[in-house]
Amino acid sequence: MPQCDVVIVCLKSVNNGKLEQLLPPLLHANTLVVLIQNGIGVEEDVQKMFPGVQLSAGLAFICSSKTQPRRVNHQCYGQINLGNYSCKDETLIQQVIADFNAAGVKNIDESFADKMIEMTDVMVPYSPSMKFDFEFHRSMEIHYLYTRPLQIAREAGFPMHKLEMLEAELRFIESTYKGK
Image 1 (tube, rainbow, N blue to C red):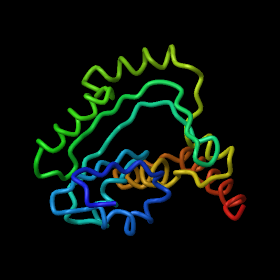
Image 2: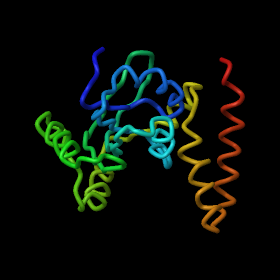
Image 3: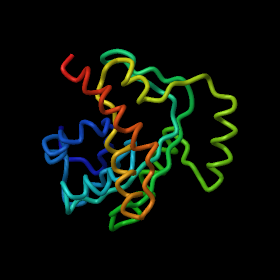
């Protein structure tokens, strides 16, 4: 694959260790890397891996799930919100947004919270990706969905003991099937 102007990273964050091999061949001096991954702190860690890379963060509102190898089921929705993390040229992000819009992927605006509540009320019953990972005995995104937010909260003086217990339980559950 040749070097790209834009690289969209949609890997589960549990696979971010693979980025050190996957990304470099795709990058040139002005490549924009768009991270569309669950969790808090993903961008900071990827930026540490690739200090000079321009990053944009994406928030996807889509109901899809991987239920078997090479198969993703899309149930409903397909919106995305992009924000600048370390991109020096805001026009690059605006062009990506325009390209998404041209492809029919709507971008989320300030009224997103109200829209999300309305859409959630009428959406098809849906399980979050971590539930599917649990059910299929796949690695769960515990680090960026629990561990990292808990660390940030503790550093700010707000320990969340019940969430810490949930994190510990999830790590225990995951440890029982990692080798399978």
